[in-house]
Length: 425
Ligand code: GLC
Image (cartoon, rainbow, N blue to C red; front, top):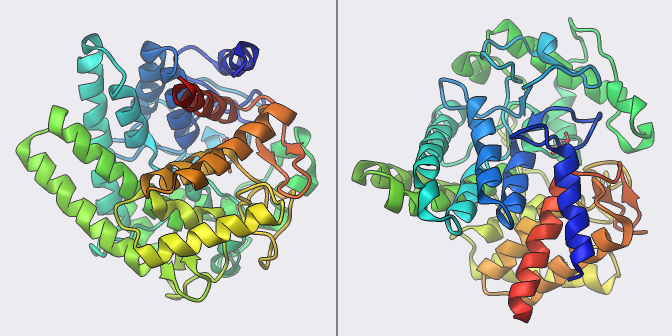
């Protein structure tokens, strides 16, 4: 891997560094985002453990008393983003949004811990406690009935904002808002690539509702018209719980190890229920109607990351990936080509995202399918090298979309490059 490529990836992180935490990209996303920072922390860990830990520590400073790690932490004010703290109306000392995002935190912490020297142990131990509190929050606030399936109460929590999976559950969310909507995003990127206005009104309707409930987790659970088991989050949480269990061997107590093991077993059982026979892939489920979503999305591959992944599912996912490669489609489109709702350029309705690809590749590797892992990694790296550190890529034309200086894309470039160099060594 040429050193200038690695230098360029590092310089994207440096340009987006705001002093101890990183913004996803300048202007469009001027604060700290939860899962972006987890990937960025792993990227930093390829060359600077101290800085990698700071990234997670900055996230932990936004953690709520009940354990939730928010989707956005507004460390410093900025005028280029909507909705800001005045819309969220939460009560944390550092202003934050009131919802969370995919829990990659413990995966990142384990990744960093594996390469950190003894001098970092106290900082890692403190972050382990933040991770433990976060996972307890997921169980208590988002699976109060103990089914082993956690729910999201806002599409922004999934990290896949406008995926067609949310179209049906959103149909029952009113478009009325008490907040005036300002589409600041459209000043930075083409409207054709972004969610539509009517979608935005529904997103903000939910924010208004939860703010009116004082962001009380139980009240939100009772009152929400939007309750979805997101396959991405359930798979990532399953994998993260396993990572937390391994960290607990070094940093936790006997009782904590037992607690994590029982949550982990429940999550594995829950994932089994999210296998969707009709589409031959894992799928999200609307927990209000009880309906599984019959739409094939890239996140449907993520249970590969977990201990729960039976042979039938593995085989079906392998075939699906081979099909994409044969069709000369850049793997893995956020919504697979040909699915209802597929749009090659609109955000999570088709474009390829490097972070999801990275997790899918790790999933194939975990299941012993090294060839598939390599194919996905090569495709991701190839796209980044060709068109830059873009937010996402058109799966049909391979065009880079949404701006060229995205932190998490740079982080993934560093991670895959490092793996490749290790293989070559
Ligand atoms: C968008 C993405 C989300 C990401 C955020 C910051 O909202 O959908 O996944 O975390 O941007 O990059």
